[in-house]
Image 1 (cartoon, helix red, strand yellow):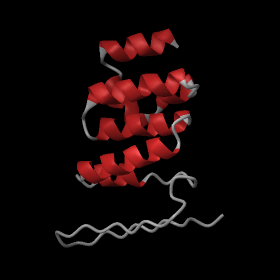
Image 2 (cartoon, one colour; image 1 turned 135 degrees about the vertical axis):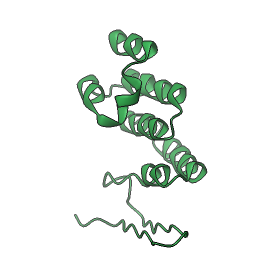
Image 3 (cartoon, rainbow, N blue to C red; image 1 turned 90 degrees about the vertical axis):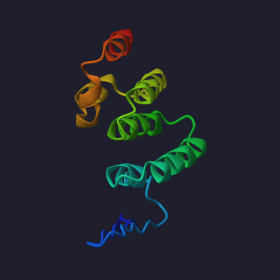
Image 4 (cartoon, rainbow, N blue to C red; image 1 turned 45 degrees about the horizontal axis):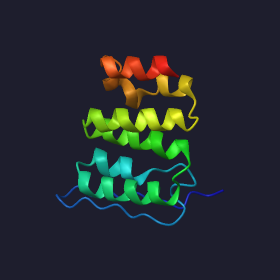
Length: 116
């Protein structure tokens, strides 16, 4: 399947991302890109829409945890990590994902991981 998402980054102060339909289904997570670009409000807006569309998908909650790590909001990231694991996300994948690096030294992270 061809990717339907195109990212356009301009060298000016204006950062532009063009997003087309199908981005989540193909594993392209635009909200992570917005978080990387320093656009937290847009990242959160997209993440909330994805959560509303896929409320039972553990992958969505894991990606939310990753996004909040990128935004350095570790308490919310841990909330989403706990939720994704409770919904069946693969613990081993969560433990090695590089986006979770900033959480690994936190006591609550250990508590959550040990629970699952």
